[in-house]
Length: 218
Image 1 (cartoon, helix red, strand yellow):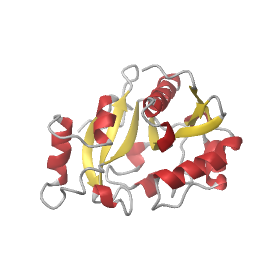
Image 2 (cartoon, helix red, strand yellow):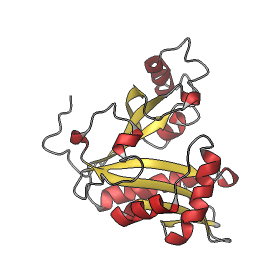
Image 3 (cartoon, rainbow, N blue to C red):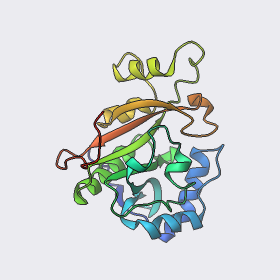
């Protein structure tokens, strides 16, 4: 997908911090927005992994994709976002970790539906290729699940979305972008009532890089 001419993808800068915090406040009204100190910490540990969608006419950041490198063998597939990101600090970034972890991606509501999230994801995949990483892993919210959680098991819901028999506002978009579901997990994000606290672990595997020797495909 080609970006409209008014937008470009670039790396995060200190001048973006205030705008990013405000977008976060709007997109995640029930969570504490990223602070300038947290964003500076992300930049300090892995500057090439913090991407911004810029609205060229204003020069403002209007979307982000934050990443860090991890050795996923040190974690469990059911681990929550807080653990995988060291409570949002990215202090657990491993410079030689073979997996790029997509910690967060969001776009200002005023600038959605222009392909920015897709372009940001393409940028992170470019990083996976450039650093010869094996894969990228993330967690997909399931904001459509909360409405049916009382009658549909989470695994069935995710399976129906994967099969195209049901549409979820977030997971369906990830699948369209080429992600594959690993499994549904409970408690990935705290207080995500829309998703009934469920999420799907998703991954994209770099076709140019073999898996680490210690990885058990089972």
